[in-house]
Image (cartoon, rainbow, N blue to C red; front, side):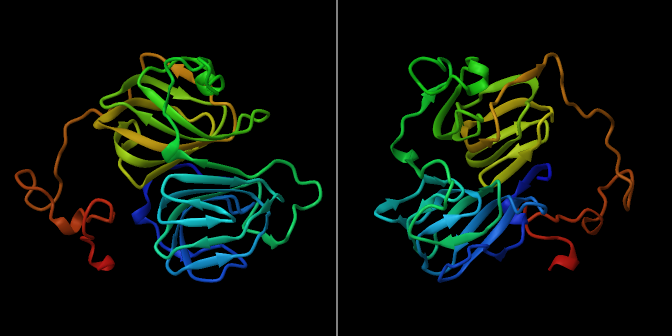
Length: 297
């Protein structure tokens, strides 16, 4: 099963050889979230050389979102903020990727398997989806049903201050991938939980909530039923790419607050007049600053 990740900066994850069979070139991946049973995964991938792969069919539902660089997908040229989704077994055109390109890549319902082919596999359903988010308009969730494909969002409940760009939506299962933006200083206090999983990667801005602070490159994967909230968007607003494996329904807990109370004490050298030595309080996160633990130098 997918583990609960709340939250992590991708810079604190190690690089692995990218799981991109039949490709020619070099790429590496950071595992944001990984199902050890099925091979389902959420990955940050960097192409360290030019890279190509022939046309064929994926074992998993496969999604790419371009953070930087360029991708040629058949006769379609994709750039920053562009997206495609290939259902399992559906024919996908040949890929050409420029060195330095970075993508977010998701595998759902299967592993990294890929079979070069000139046609879809027998029994495969669905079609290739391509969306260029940079050319799409933001949809205001204040009026979710006003002529937009928003009837599935938040159970049809208006959420002032949020805007979306829908990249993919399966109307039968409710599964979707979308960009979501919060206006500057957006606030929502109740804790919420959902009947589906929810995952997001921060693309822009900053954001505070009960599990911590987000900035570009931070990520969470939250299984169904985990309460989260007391949201505050930063003065520059916040943008994420967000995915759910079903219809996103909010079950709120009103009046809840997540607080830590108490009197801070220092128990290190020189207590109570000085802070503990740095060696006893090492920085172990590359996202916060230089490593202070000698073991990581």
